[in-house]
Amino acid sequence: MIITSLLDTDLYKFTMMQVVLHQFPGAQVEYRFKCRNAHAKPSGNQPSFDLAPFADEIRDEIRSLCGLHFHEAELDYLRSMRFIKSDFVDFLGLFRLNEKYIDVTALPSGEIDITIRGPWLHTILFEIPVLAIVNEVYFRNVCPQPDLVAGRKRLDAKIALLREAGLGDLKIADYGTRRRFSKAWHENVLLALREGLGTRQSPGHVAGTAGQLAGTSNVLFAMRLGLTPLGTMAHEYLQACQALGPRLRDSQIYGFECWAREYRGDLGIALSDVYGMDAFLRDFDMYFCKLFDGARHDSGDPFTWGERMIEQYIKNRVDPQTKTLIFSDGLTVPRTIELYRQFRGRCQLAFGIGTNLTNDLGCEPLQIVIKMVRCNGQPVAKVSDTPSKNMCDDEKYLAYLRQVFEIESSQ
Image: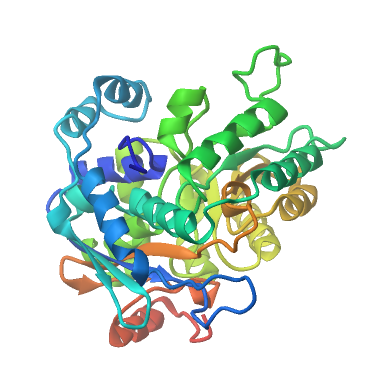
């Protein structure tokens, strides 16, 4: 059994779920799975990315996932977070995932189709564990004997790079749950990072410093390993607001306002790439520049994004050094260091590294996602600054959204 706890997911699923409980409890949604890896026939030692042969194993693991419930210690841990409200934890005490809301189908092409349909409140927790299941089932079949020694050497080399002189205040977080090689390897990576980089909670840490491991997005490992759980909002939240808000053009503004109403100044990192950077900056005015603690980058050129965010703050008479820019798009350690050197001293910085930490064992990682495609029967879309990350199953709606948000067709 791959997933043994409902806490084995990213924190932002809970922070979004709390908003859903309090503000959108009746919303109905649909999610679809997508594998971005090329499905050309493999060559040499490269395995196929076909997932259809493993559909039965994936279904069995999802069935086990749907048998889980939250334990009292897990609920107590969630209750200890200052931004998690007691009525939400009480709801989680009754919560189970329901297998009737998810369907896994093997396709003749060799791919799989995963569709999740049902109440948003009762389906939001499927995404991360299902992606982790697909990954682990795939890799235990195509790479049953990974070179863990070589993988650990690569990890140690990354830690050594981060510990070089002049990088003492560069802090990273683990964002690697959804595309990890396996749960066991994920834990090994976090243990190595905690030992090699240190945390605020590490024994013998220097007063006034917090170590270089800021935390992890994974709530279970945060609880088990004494790390800080990290996360705010994901794309699905702002996508759903396309259907839940008063009108499409104001959906991004509506999403930010609903978030602020729920958290009252806490969890103040805005996601910037559901409609592309131009549309984000048009909506992220002086009010939001002051209200939110910062923004997160997840597509497009990160260096350009950072410069544009700093320019936006200055234009709106906000000191960029009081705001946090979070970079989380396909980061490697060398790229993280480059970004740190460009923006250090000009703003506060945070870096979330995922696949490059938790799935670097010699096999090419799966580039898999589960994205919301409908809310309350209406299509919703993500239009990214990286076109390959776009997700929408209704071309007419996508064209209309581009027109409303003045998004160029090249995105």
